Length: 537
Image (cartoon, rainbow, N blue to C red; front, side, top):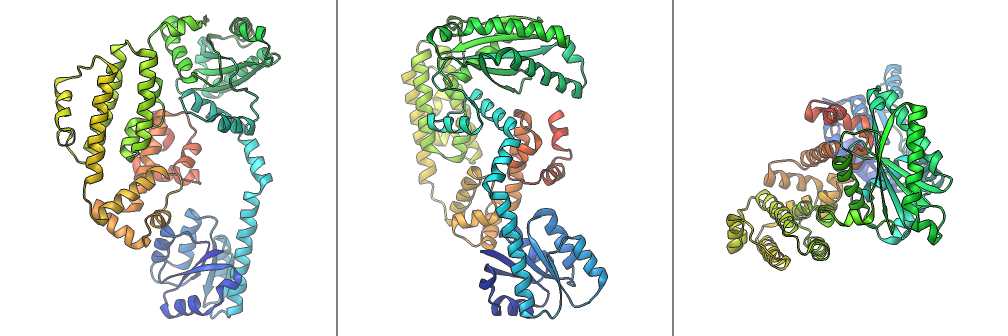
């Protein structure tokens, strides 16, 4: 069932049309009323509307201006124009704005119902086509390389998946990588001749290098690659054979192929590449640690040298210092505190302390690393909530003033538990009247539904009328919900532009903009430059 909006500057006519016609017979569930173009836009910002019936002649924003704005923001909404003038010019403009229908006033009831039924049928046909299984498969196939890149990058960044979930994604993306099988990781840096190319030629050469890798490895190995935020290419390599002998020799065999790969790149593309090779016993375990260790080894052991091939043994990987992976795996502690997800915080810290005990139990440096991360996340969250750390932490605050004196993991765990319990208790016992509680619920909802949050969906979540919710939110925060939502989306997009390799249209989709062109416009309105210019700077 669809939602209809009737717009006319004659309230009686609007009320008559909304109340007296059997809209349910043509697929309409709800009918909204507006008495001006501006009021219509406010309703559409608050409520999903499928079909609009509007008069052409209205004070202020005319019907034609209204549907032009609707087209810019809600391209799938069907618009039906009403006019008291049989004027070809108006009809021509209506066609230019892709109006679904053009009716002369006073329109007969049957005419209106028939026009709305036609618009509803067009919508149903449109969305059935988009949501069809075949359409989804075609879209998946068209975007397969991008989706594969995203999944590999998420694994390299420490994103955890259940075994069943990862298998489902691998199968969906047609990636024949077996879980719990040994895998190799190859980090590649393009050098010299490649660095001198234009952006277009460089992209073509990158494509050629990856094709050569596929040619060299594909007969015996499965390859899966992506480009990371540092400009390195990361190749995941797994043997097509699962024999014990093949797996035990995996790193040595990959090294032989890698040497051939370097040779052919230099021979045919006239450029050099440096490679770092590592191996792990069970995919996808320790992918982030292996990747991070490869990055560090690249910088420390190869540096600015050219054409190097470095193979890292498992002994070398376990013999050197490294950061704590669970401490930096998403979601970060600072974000969990901001959203007040206390149970998830407890789960994350349990993993952090378990890793600390198992891998770095004797390392005072790693105890300090964990302490500083927890302390900085807490201070940010407490101050953002307009509170003082001394008031929240009590005696534990003295630990911050005098500096960390932890010598054991047990001491750090005890201090962390005490501080978090005090913070959680303060936040839970803080008496807030209904408006403040509503604001908190809105912000929690938006934080977890940024991609599809809207005033209407937020209002439904807190069980309030959209108009009333907007007013009390602005009274409490000084900022309208739409402004808050837009600001949060832009700040999130700016952060992603700085810290991820995602394409502009991918970031636009992640922050809830279906039209990339509109996302670029909104971003430029806020920051004065386009997203690409922002990233380039």
